[in-house]
Length: 465
Image 1: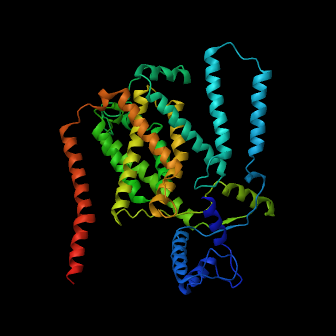
Image 2 (image 1 turned 120 degrees about the vertical axis):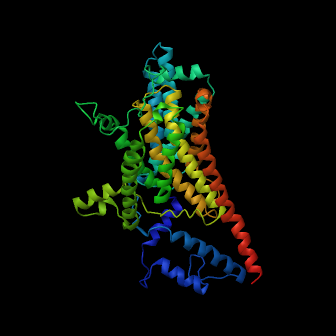
Image 3 (image 1 turned 60 degrees about the vertical axis):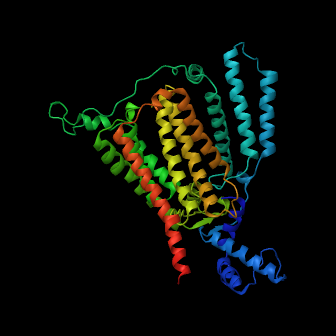
């Protein structure tokens, strides 16, 4: 949450002397036109124009508040929550003084170059963690999310650097990160023999099934569990899940890694791993929406059990907002939801194409770090996108994390296009092209009917009534 939202949420759980919550009193004051947030005292003065403006602003504020859980926060400001800007600056200065005056610089150009780049990144992270703008999340700590914002900037700059290299230099540059990289790798084909029970193999007739049960199975489940917590909508998650399987069918002529058996696509991936992850994610969302958000200082809790519980809940959200995407409500939201689905699918494809063009094995730690990165920044980006869509009066520009994630997704795709255009431009089979043209035609037809033709018909009927 932002600071303003945190303040609103903190007041939401308090009760007035009359025994009514501020939300109830706000309703009553709005109905009588007596509420003025610009005045802190009991006296309220203003012209009728000002009163109408205040009432409209208050209604907007109330509608915004009603989408959030009520929060009680005792406002404890301990050492853990202070900024510590001077402390971080002092420690950083001491480290730089030590490196400059007390440490002998090695006579190794490559090592010094690497160390200088790492030191520059660390200094930027120290600045960002203490000085960057806060995002919508505050738990477990605002500095945690500021750290990932700075990591996002560093990653985008790294991608831009790779984009501006030649294909050979870009791939060989990966050797500076890991000497094992920079070597072309074969792609694994998950298709081939698709018999669940293979009678020809007497020793292990279910070998096809066991071969598919690799590390990607729990990764599918965990990935969709986390994506559900980001998107917070069952329908959108299922659409993205099914659409990605269609993309794998459509692009298996480009990457052998996309070639899978039919039961691997629809039973193991969609029905078991993805659906189970989405189901568990929706159950978690239900618990988070019903959970009471009451925050109390750690040292004011008398029992050790209560202290341990408070520490554990520090890693849960400060409050909760249920996402109501409502894609069919207007054209703007419909196009925004289509854009979100498109960017999700593009980011998923980038995972496979990037490791293919940069010659990284699937089990390499850089591939895992990229997934961990998107886990931490994706939730913030989705919250900023939802706020931007849901309430443009309060959020007049797209959030910083959402902006960077969109830029990263596009930059990754441009790297893929530049580094291996031959693979990208391989002709798509004719029947696949027909299916996609049909799908696009249906989407465009429904869009025209829902937001143009139907609206015109309704307006015409209203005029003739």
